[in-house]
Length: 91
Image (cartoon, rainbow, N blue to C red; front, side):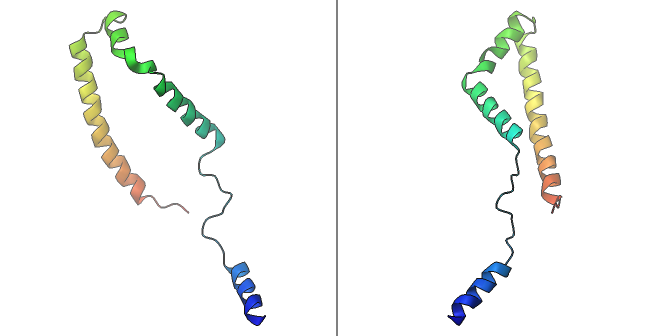
């Protein structure tokens, strides 16, 4: 009996590292991510290049160069931002 009561006291005093009811992403953000996933599954951006070429009259070569530059910038930017986030200390 003494060991059972000691175990209960130890369990009650041990604080948990992370609260169980804490949400790191709010409801609005979760809903936005779900909507974004649904929109991507509908292939809304599938005809983006055709729209730019036919409606906006932007040459396909210029679109390709722009997309390449944006992709390279995204790679470089992701590396630096990841380093910043990794070094950031929060509670």
